[in-house]
Image 1 (cartoon, rainbow, N blue to C red):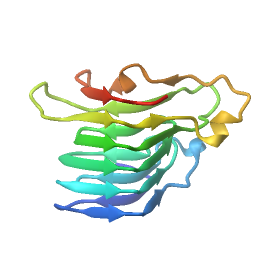
Image 2: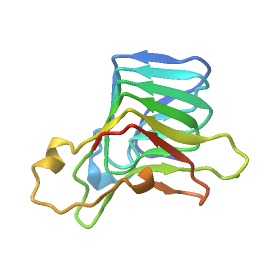
Image 3: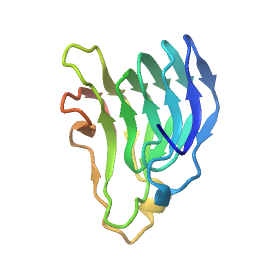
Length: 161
């Protein structure tokens, strides 16, 4: 499915601590997934996810991310998992010209699915390339994203911008 995938995680109970997952394809290559996670009850603690479009694919099942750094541009946290992000930093980067940043794209396909993206006590701030650019890039935070299927679920609590 992805021409530029760095790491795929499957199974049950996967745990990653202090690991950087990076896809260095660059914005010009569009979709470049750093991690595709389909592991049930997976946990990522103090990890960094670096890429541009579609950095972190929260593909399916139950996932937990705490004190992580996530960098990207277009839909850089996306998928159809039940994913919780706590005390993490979310860094929109400078996208290609005429693009905008959308932090999440939740991919629920059925209104009865127990999936969604929950962002708790996280901080959103621009990555250095966006912060110091002369660009007027738009970054969408309202609802923290867009649905890929029209049935998205997002929950945001205590977020710093």
